[in-house]
Amino acid sequence: MAKQFKLSKDEIRPLAEGYGACIATDRITVDGYPVRFMYREPPDNEVDSGWRFLSGFEDDAYMDDASNHGAYDVNTIANYDPSIIPFLDAPEGSVFEKSPESERFLSVTDWVPEEA
Image 1: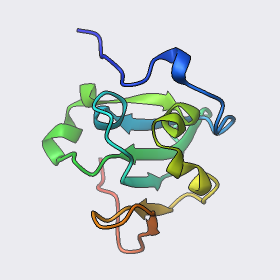
Image 2: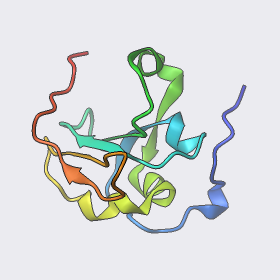
Image 3: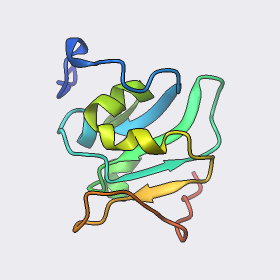
């Protein structure tokens, strides 16, 4: 079954071009949740920006199912949630999250990604 994305191709505007690819979950691209957690790791290949975008509503079981996330152009995810744009030039190792009571990203300094 094909995914039904929240935004159509015609709704994607040039907001953050030239950043490369990223990984985002279906909670954002299909369900329409805003980005509430984002981190940048070393890129997997020459087109990967290293950015990973999550809604904050993904548990381990959800993340373990590869069909629940996909590779996208960073510009596409910026169209889903433009609040990520000011942080896109942050270096590898950067982590940001929005707490439930805030609509602003804050830097996270105590998060370490799980080893695959």
